[in-house]
Figure (cartoon, rainbow, N blue to C red):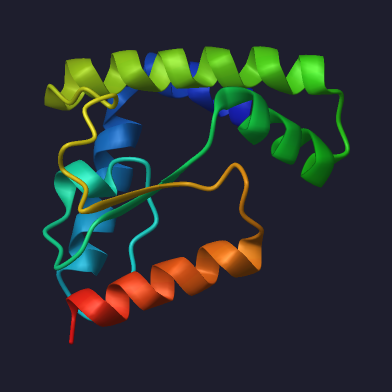
Length: 130
């Protein structure tokens, strides 16, 4: 099942979202964890919340390169998936995924390499948690 197919399936089966989110919360409560999940910023209690982002075009180009797929195809899928997720998360939890006020650090990675992003995140976490 592709990500797009899964996304369409979950739209009509909200119990899947709830189960995945419950498992994420359960694991996060064990402590000393880094949680990477679409809703982690809103659902997980954390000492420091970071949102890594980039403009849509940059994200799509990265996905297309990683998956060796046409940019246009990835663009269509990404827009569709993000619209679906925004709708589902609003309906399920009342969460507006465009409200980033829950994050302590929002980092636009568009002009950063993976290594530069990693250095910034590690530095920020070290500073906050010292």
